[in-house]
Length: 461
Image (cartoon, rainbow, N blue to C red; front, top):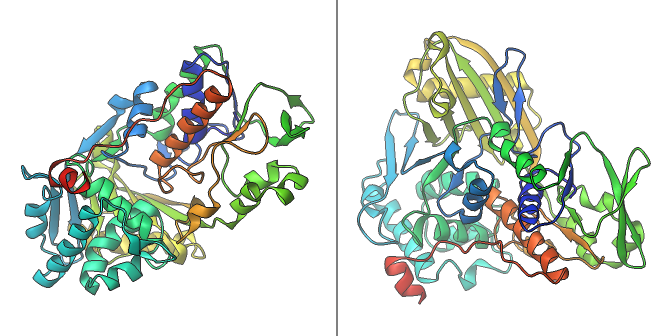
């Protein structure tokens, strides 16, 4: 197993449970890949970026259970939105059947007018009746094109669609395929009453995945960190070993590359890249950035566990002090801000980003205006995810490859999901299933998605 991110870990854990002796190689000093934590000199832990799950992420939930992390996720039934005018709006479920379960709170949402809501309701009804699969969402259509075609107002786009989708898919509406945006709303907000629930780790990400190593090693496997792989050796169309930068080669019965899409081509022999489009086309996938901003205040400035932010560069604010359940040290409070698809911030200095985000926090949180920032830091992930551009599914390879005994895992592979933690786990499970099938020991790891309920079930049959 090459790569210790979520895709590699989920595949490794599943295979270990199935009786395989797994050896996992990770070049970093920690597991988790992009979902990782860093230790500060004072002993504090900082996640590279806040990661969340949702109720519709059935395979991620299963993976957390397998590695003993399910109890470290706090689930929330209420989503709170904030704007610079001090208004708060909430979205939460009611007793109505899907897709109407969120309708009462949506009707009272203060950041949208009657015309905005009427247009949104009509578009959501179209998505629900189509079961999240609409003919006019393909053929190169962007989400922004689809929304305009379906009569969405600018306030509706800015205060509703964009808030959800840019964060969920790490891409701007005019760059993302409509297919992906529509699927997000179907799976998370329309099909099932539990799909929209937000889950946030109550521990640092490094601790969240600590059980993965034990799940592998307790079954006779190995986890090796700080190990650099140079490439895959191929002989007579079959994988014959993994070559490392220290001139060492290790062999196995099966091999899984769970590495970022922009790294994979460097692992594959040039002759195979030239003749196999499944490998060569991976380079057509583009990357999108995410920026995390971390601020420590000398006092409590926020009461809510998290906020979705409207009309600002900052998109989400997470109250890390409250979410961790830790008692504030001398009244201090730690907030983490997240900006997805942060193209405009890539060229800015960390000082510029801190100043920009701090100004926005003071607009949104009045108690922060007189507070002192004890410290702050910025973590940029310039290639955080692959971009869900229109038509990018044609470049996403299956987990099986033309190289015998060589498999792929990663959220960028063909999973049926975009670049999410759920997608990464799905890819790991699918790779594990492919290995079991090739070994003559078929086994099912992939969990079904949430069932459609209420009217959504009736409309989709």
